[in-house]
Amino acid sequence: MSWIAEEDLKAIRSQADIVDIISHYLDLEKRGKDYKAVCPFHDDHDPSLSISAEKQIFKCFVCGAGGDVFGFVQRIENISFQEAVYKVADMIHYPLEHRSVIKREDPNQRYYDALQEYIRFTCYELKSEEGKQADAYLRRRKMTDQIIDDFEIGYAPAADISRRFLQAKQYSPQILEEIGLTSGGRILFHDRFLIPIHDENGYPVGFTARRLNDRSSEPKYINTSATKIYEKGNFVFNYHRARPAARKAERVILTEGAMDVLAFEKAGIHEAIACLGTACTQRQLQLIAGLKQPVTVCYDGDQAGQDAAYKFGRSAAARHLSFQIVQSSTDQDPDEIFDSGGKEALSEYVSRTISWVDFLFDYLRKKYNLDTYEDRKAYAQEIFEAIKLTDEPFEKQTDLQKLKQRSGFDFSQAISQPVQPHRKNRPLPQTVISMPEDGRTHAERVILSMMLLNKDAARRFKEEIGFFKNEYCRQIALYCYDIYREKDQLDPDDLMSRINEEPVRRYLNDLLLDTNRPQTFDETYFEDSLTKVRKCLIQEQLDVINRKISSTSDLDEKLKLWNKKKELIMNKDRLGRKEG
Image (cartoon, rainbow, N blue to C red; front, side, top):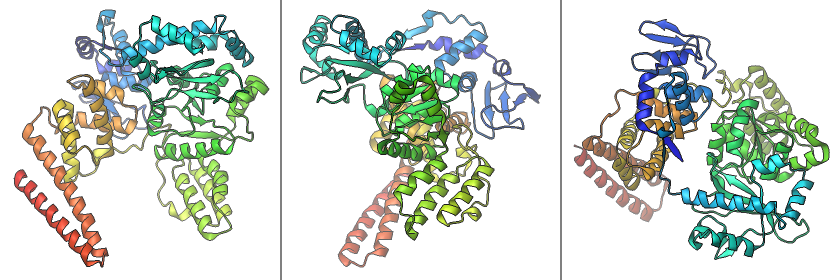
């Protein structure tokens, strides 16, 4: 991995006029000392984006988008922080030479190197005499040279051949175990073709391996188990290759497995990804949201695939992702559809999409017995919750009418206020911190601010309390811990570049722009804030105990609760004296 030298970052930031850079993208209007523009990050009609030439920052007071010149280019181009820096450097003709790129000391680099070496070996073996059967199998599956090369598909030969290669490369048994090539000294992959799995930056982390003989009793697929660098739920297959294609196609296709992705590749459709399983984790959802494109969910038409689509839909709707689901009338997977009908059949298949609400109408009929009142009510309530998130008023009214016809429940009066639309994976345009802050919220913001300034503050909070009540603080803290594992100081730009979720980015941006936040680490202020949070935690415990005391008639239980309450009150009083 690499990063751009700090002196170059500072030089580019100081030489790049944010007004000039943004004017390349937007029409600006001067208002006093500042400039105004129609915000490109939400459905804006009146200029709500403010650009400060003095502070060299931008800020939208409707959707909350804001940051410096790099942040603007990164957001509007939908590119990484590094790519944004290079883009700005080009625009101001700053000579960002190769000397600027410094090798980062990555503790995982040796694992990446070992896996890449093994990938090269398996690619060579595919073209060797040993790999003839595997190569013939891939050709029967209509894999082209281009696909095989692009995806670095290889062949794992007999175990003794792989062992001789790995021994010749002098990889230690420990390394081989840690990257998942061996287990207890036994070579895991043999007589299978291998498809490498990469992280979002293109570094190899594991494999999915398919058997060649479909009559074999061995499992059809073997995947890399959890290793030092690989946990299945943390990665999305083909993410790094699909990212630019998704931007161009203005969509991303979510499939179940690697072979489904390859089926779309055979059809010339390059924006397909896979979660390598039917369950999509929160981390995978975070990565998918980072693509900032509508999602076409293309899971298999069997019950397992439809169950997976339902689970994904619930999680995606909660995150306000823009998505539709392929309406499947076949049990064939994408690979089988391509094999039987070619590119046209697969393209037509993936174009038959329905909304999340329409999917629920059909899917939930199998979950609930609509002949009973309670099930019909639960059916209607679940669909209504999805309808509330619908963007278009006409579509919403149509869905409400359909729900009334199918369930007998009329929810039209329940929507008294129009629902704010969620535009293409963008969050609701309120700013999180505009709400009045209670004591704990303020204390948590102070603690998080201190964590951005001081590594030891992050360590102490993690060890002594370990949990933010505020969801955005909680997620930002996790990124802070990751950075502090790599280095002793935190660069806010580096932190921002790692965060994909828009609400979290917006919260962090507001925190960084808050003139009232601590600008230097203050031990006393930090201790006071920790104490406030501890007192709040104790008060929450007291509230729970008070409710239990009121609800129980068991005298022994009441006595235990009173003793616990007394102990907590004493602890809270001690914290109060410490705070004072």
